[in-house]
Image (cartoon, rainbow, N blue to C red):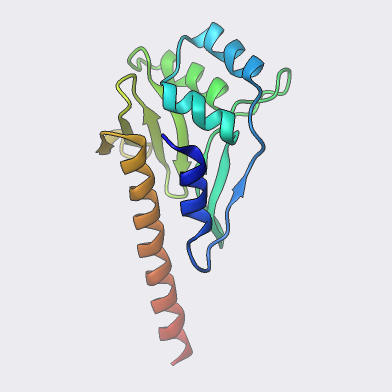
Length: 159
């Protein structure tokens, strides 16, 4: 995964706003892997590039990519904290919760580089991508569809 290319892809989209956090330290990534096991290589690389992000900030954030919490400052919406909770509820080994949508879709990275989406309301799987790059393309496509729908609604209200 070329993290810089992914960040550039998001930033190149017209009329969109994103907030990428500074990179996570390698020591912190190693600490999390020491307690939870090895994370997929691409996830390790992503955290080394940015430690979480808020994507498509419009009327709130549409997508949140989790980062690792700072030591001693647990954050519920972080990979390290949420992974522990996810695994306590019967998740497969090697699964890493990595993000959430504004509608409650929880993104889970698998040990095979796949990313799946768990519907937290319906308690079922609703999407799957075989690579992080395809997952990113999905996020962009979904956000652009949502923005087009919002614009259509705004245009309709103005009439």
